[in-house]
Each structure stands twice: as C-alpha cells, then as structure tokens.
Image (cartoon, rainbow, N blue to C red):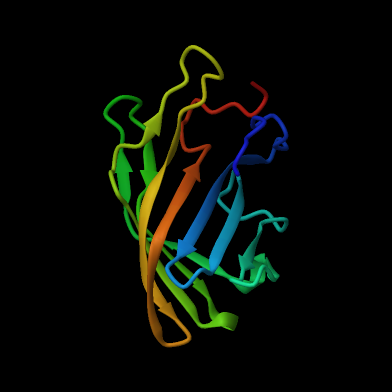
Length: 153
C-alpha cells in the first residue's frame, strides 16, 4: 500500500525523492527510496527493504544498493525532465534489475491542488538474482524534478 501524506516533511536541503517498488515473478519484492538533496546527493536516511516469499524482510541501508539512471524523458506539458529507466543493484544479494517505464508519459500535474508536478507510473522489470533470470513489474515515483518544486507547499 502506498499513501503519500505530502512533501512538506522534506528539509530545506532536500528537494525530492525517487521511490521504487518491485514485485518479481519468484515472489520476492523490493522497495527502495532515495531522498535527494538539492545538490543531487542521496540523503543518508535513504534505504530499502527486500521481502522474501515466506514474509521475512531484510533492511537495506543506502550503502547496500545502487541505482543508476539509464535515460531521461522530457514532459511537453510541464517542460520537466525526469529520469527514465534505471539499473538497480544489490551486490550483497547478487541482484541486478533493469526497470523500464511501460509508458514514458506518466507525469501527474497538480495545478489545482499541491502545485507539484511528479512522475509516477508502472515499469517492466528484468534482471538476475543469484545468476538466475528474473522478471516482474514495478512502480516508480519521482518528485522534485520540476524547477518550480517547493517543499513547503
């Protein structure tokens, strides 16, 4: 379940977040979030969780995973450029996943409410876990890429 209560909890030096939720066909799930500083660096509180088929969970501190952006997409509606396509690596679990948006334009414009533009949408997932091919589906949420983003709104 995902329920966002807003972005007003961000500190002055934080601009937004990248959130990833992945469900693999082998019943393993992965959730990661990276809170970004205004200088582009990830906040030390960024982390993740692996969920195994038997319900066990494993906390992943920021140092346990990496996310590489593979491309970008520019909105014609807001003129905002968002990351598009990611390579997620969890070396300690031999997990390498490639996430590709199912549709490029999954931007949400909230001109009549919060005034925050963000990209939120479904992705296809393929990769390897411990040398075995895996695939699945996922969901990604990206905030703070709009130049007009104001965390105090």
